[in-house]
Length: 198
Image 1 (cartoon, rainbow, N blue to C red):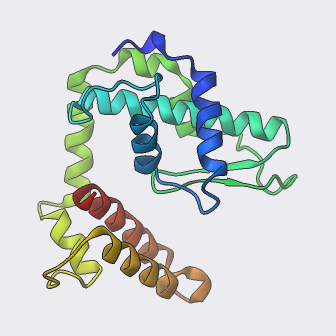
Image 2 (cartoon, rainbow, N blue to C red; image 1 turned 90 degrees about the vertical axis):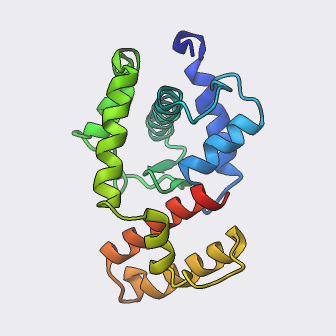
């Protein structure tokens, strides 16, 4: 994949259009799938099974998102909430959602040298480290299903999983007395199950 070939401004504009059409937000996975299904010229159409292609796709999307967030803030046109689990366009509110002076993730994704310098070996090492931390040696899909209390359901599809996810988020949301940690676990499990059942 030739990274120089991607005009990042256009990718930011495309992402803004997608996020405006999804008021509840979108996951990175959903955004990338939509961009690729539309044959977006900014992203390689090579298989995301290739770790380096996956890394570069992720990097370009997050680079565009962070640049878009700064542009929206500068224009007082909105605030972009960016996390691996949900990207959401919110209304602009002066003072309450200002950009942080020190944001290591922002600095990383806005530094295009990170994209150019990262090799396939670097990506493999990052992925190994990530999966070891996430999985702790177990079957992550099985653990996610157990958390959702769906491990014994014979006819399981993504619609059922999403329904259960909404139930759990509603029950365990911190605004309703739940814990932030448990909600984060539910969100992480949903990401795993979306990848497995898509």
